[in-house]
Image 1: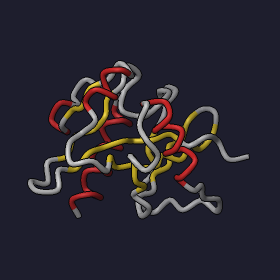
Image 2: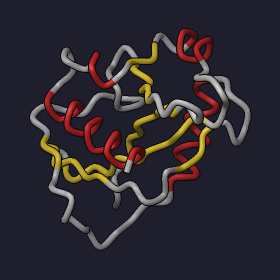
Image 3: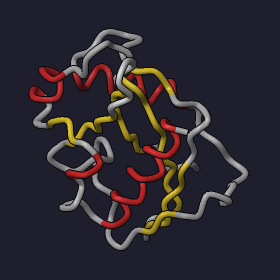
Image 4: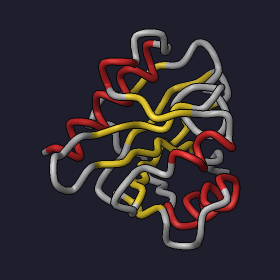
Length: 138
């Protein structure tokens, strides 16, 4: 059985290219932290099973009180994390609005951060953010 995917949620400003990540009380991997120890697999890791992002993104919209379609999948992004409970897929979603949904983040106990504000996160989360940042900026 494939474990439930985790999400990284970001907003990319369409005019400036500024990228901000949703950081919740549990970190940037929504909606539950990755267990310790965890390690990010290299880009080349390609498991035989894949998960479709739509259900996870819809759940995130509901949890954040956002309308359907407020989060779009970044379909080409794939990351897998090795955890004590097994491999966990990490998907990437992008907020579709012109501005980040600041009030939704606050309601969920979170805030938006830039990559440079990720120093306090775990190593695996920092590596996931780096990979997501490289993905959205090409």
